[in-house]
Image (cartoon, rainbow over all chains, first blue to last red; front, side, top):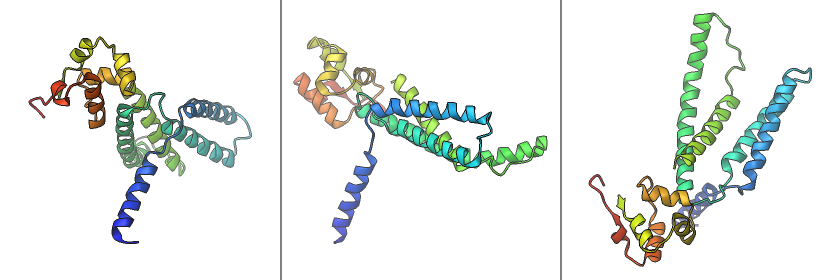
Length: 147
Length: 66
C-alpha cells in the first residue's frame, strides 16, 4: 500500500467515524435510562446496598446514557444542527479541560481555607466526563432553542 | 453575508416551512439564514438557487466585513 492509498484510507475512515450517530429514537431511550439510573442512585444512597461496585456500575451506566443522548440525531438533522452540535462539542471539550485544571486547585483552596480534608475520590474521571457530556447536551439544547 | 431569501420566497409565495421542505432542512434553519444568523453551505445555496431559478449571487451578497 503506497502513501497515497494510506492517506485516502485514513481520511475515509476518519470521515466515516466522525459521522457516526444514533437514530433519533435513542435520545428518549437515553433520557429515560439516565433518569432511572439517577433515581436508583438516590434510592441506593439511603440503603445498605450502596457498595463500591454498585456505585462503579451506576457511574459507568450514567456515562453510557449521557453518551447515547449526546450521539443521538435530531428529527431533522440538517447542516445547521450539525454545525450547532460541533459548536457544543467544542465548548464542552474546552470547559472540561478547564474544569480538570481548576478543580484540584479549588480542592486545595477549600482544604486551606476550611481545613476540610481532600478525599482521594473527590476528583475522578467520572466527574470530568459527566461534566463534559452534560455541558455538551446543555449547550446543544440552548443553541438549538435559540437558533 | 446578506441575503434576500425572504423576498425571493415572497415572490414564489412560499412559507418558510414550504421552502424548508423543498430543500430538506428544518423551518428554523430557513429562519436563521433569513436573519443572517447562519451562513449555509454551497450545497444548500445551490439548492436554494434551484428552487428560486436564479444564480446564487442574485440572492446572496457579501457584506462589508466579509
